[in-house]
Length: 345
Image (cartoon, helix red, strand yellow):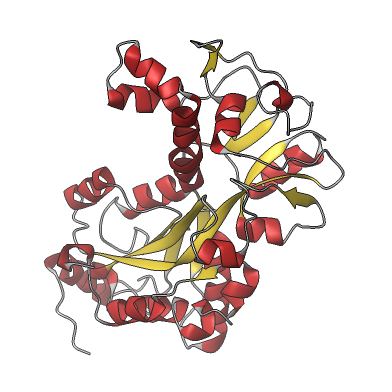
């Protein structure tokens, strides 16, 4: 299919044509949640096509998108993996550096789960309010908004164990953190009445929302900047610890972890695909259209990733924990057509 190159694509095509060291492999970076899926695809792509195996790095959604938006050219990455949608300010940063045609590819869905040691106490009956009461910076106590001094889970929910609060949550550079904030902390803050108390105290609604996302800094809540293996190591060394993981990671570590319900629903492929489980999110990767036709195998990699054989309900990604997208066929058509976000994808 003939591809109309943008000016920036023509520029790097010229570089590629005159440089003996032109890059011939696809380069990917970003979300640690998407990493295992992208690694499976990259390996299969290298084995089943004539293209070199893509280089896939982690680092978090924000870090990957920052690198993606650095510019166009073989010294920049081609694909950014993300466990959240690209933000408007990131699109603006991309545009400022000449990255104007971005293809958004949704690969499927994942759930954020709360899991603890197999041999530790059972944490069931979680509601967003419980997580907020455990680690929110300001909580309601006797009708007043106060600094969070809760030490054990049963102080605010008698159905939870009387053990020390110890939560290990994704650091701020991870896409998982944004979903955790949006779907757990913020609803929990609202449910406890803390958000309304902040507004009644003179805060604007926006400022109150920001305040709801603040977590305590006394050691009860610990940010994990690494990947899920670091969170697992913390759980391994803390009998009472609760960690935040992606569904796929949990399912591959059920010998070490047991999962909690959220709002009475256990996270499974089925409960996530139907939307019944409340803490789920779509997963994406983003492609620079300007690099298609310049970096060998880039479009083919994107097509390969979302093919039924890989991302469908019976494919290896589903076996690893990805919840297949019911609208996968539409995504495949959009990738084939190279539809960009600005063209209405």
